[in-house]
Image (cartoon, rainbow, N blue to C red; front, side, top):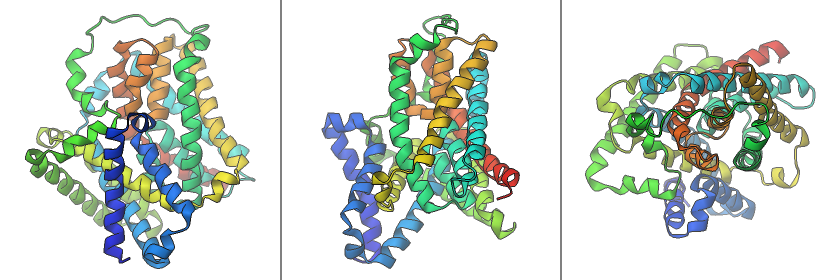
Length: 396
């Protein structure tokens, strides 16, 4: 199979998975992002890919496509964000989100010191963990590129992250509120429609189902969707130009930080922020990235558990949750706000309505969106910063 055909196949498989999820309800409940990554892993496990495409061709397509997809996705995900509205939703929500970010950084750094002698390149793990658990998977992938992280470490982390994040989500939706309500105050209602005026600014990010991607097939919107993609590509080209001015060891980090910054700046331009479907297109590129990364997975990481890495990620999730709860107690932040901001950091935007529903509190949906969006924005900066600072402290 030629490189061109291999590339087309990698681009189209996520679309087939989206259609499948739209038609099979229980698959959609699993989530098309998880299904894309899992499908890639399953395909890698068959061992057929190198025979079908050729080992060298396959490796080139996988590496280049994963890097290009994540680079283009970053501005697209940020373009439609109303940054001013996000930071404007102040009060306990933003205070608690700040605590959540600090808790993740502390837990990641502490874990790096604990496992400094047992985990190779632990500074890379620390940086990617901060990206994943302050922003989300796209941030983790961006930081991986920025710091030149080991591919095997990255794919192993994604696999363990899926399992542990699922356990975290189950805990937050079931046992967390009864437990933490014992020492955090109850939520005080702001009124049923307190955040109604901001709903249109975040609603496009709320749909976690496969139906969210239907808008990409809207023929009338295609020119503007294509324009969003073009602007994203321009952002990447400018970032590469800026990165060429710095030493090679820092070029990847500068590229990712510049791409993120350009995306945020562009979001302040109403004409760009209002381009239809930019967020959904960015999410589709994330599906392409997830599927591609899944096919690069060494499936032995599933059967041969890396106990230290699994424990490290567990420490971050459990440690950051407990540390945030303690600080929220000192700051008199309520249980629901604590849980929605912890979830905004760990799980990202699409899970906010699900968690708010489990907490039986719809008022926290929009503040939760704002908190998660801020995590998206700052995740790359925090992750890259923690990675290099940890490397310096450890002398790695």
